[in-house]
Image (cartoon, rainbow, N blue to C red; front, side, top):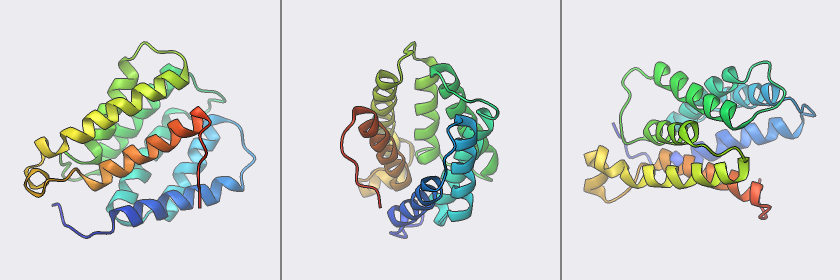
Length: 175
């Protein structure tokens, strides 16, 4: 690890597209059910290592929201923590400086924030995720030597950027 395979972005995009395609067909409004549907779609559409990691994260996220119809800031932070825990348990040899690190740092930032409104909380979440992403080369010498950040972690930050854009009402282009 890591293996420079050059397809992390494609694999993450295909995994997310599987989620989008599935959720477009859903009329469900319960956050617990939507989270479960997204997680199952990610599992079925997972591509590559980053797709697998995202799907395990989403499975833990969904499990934390099981039975809930709505989500507040506290339950959102708990769901992020649940996603990180599920992913950590699924990995045989977790490596710091990867998507796992950025997910964990992001979840901790949301859980410890005293922000109740989702829009400012999402902005805070994105800022902390970007900070964590910038530190990935410090944690993984191969990234530092190459002068790059972890591609899967960057993809996760891009997903968060899309969520924040949506909350801001910015135009999105989705496959």
